[in-house]
Image (cartoon, helix red, strand yellow):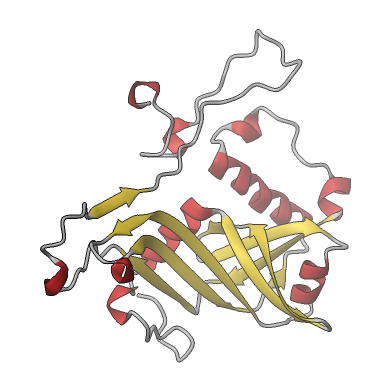
Length: 222
C-alpha cells in the first residue's frame, strides 16, 4: 500500500486515486521517463530524465557536470512525475471531453551511488530492462566510464498514483445529442527494430518483444 501523507493526498478527482504499490511500479516500469523538479537561483526547473526502478528505488544517471545531478546530490528535496497517456474521451458536450491516463508522483531526496561495482550492476539492470540479454552481447562500461557517470537513487517511500479510466460522463440533458461519443485510444507501439548503417548483415536480429507485452509491433495488426 502506498504511503498516506499530506503531499500524497489526492483532493482533485479523488475517485481516481490508487493506493496499490504495484500500480506505482507498473507506471514507472512502462514510462521510463521521469520529470524531475529542482529549484536553482533562477527559480524552479523541471527536467525529463531516463529513470528506472529496481525493487523499491528509482534511479537516474548522467554526467558529473549536470546541473540537475549536482543539485540533487546536495540533498535538495525533489518531486518526480511519471505520466502515461492512454486516450481521449470524446463526449457529447465540449465541456466533458477529457482523457484516460495513468500518473504517479514521487517525493523525497536522492542519494548518490558511489561504489563502482554497485553502479555497474544497477546501470546494467537498466539495459536489461529495455533489451533483455543485451549485457551478454555488448562491451560493458569500464572503470573510466563508470567514474564519469553519476548514479542517483530515490526511495519509493512517499508516492501517489492517479488513474483516469472513467469513460464518457455526459450530463443527462446531453444524452439525446446526435454526436458520436466514446474513447479514442492512444497506444505506444515498440518496434520493429531498425538496424544502424554499416551493421554486419550476418548478425542475427535480437528479439525483445517479451519486454514489451501488448506493446510490441505486430505487422498483422497494422
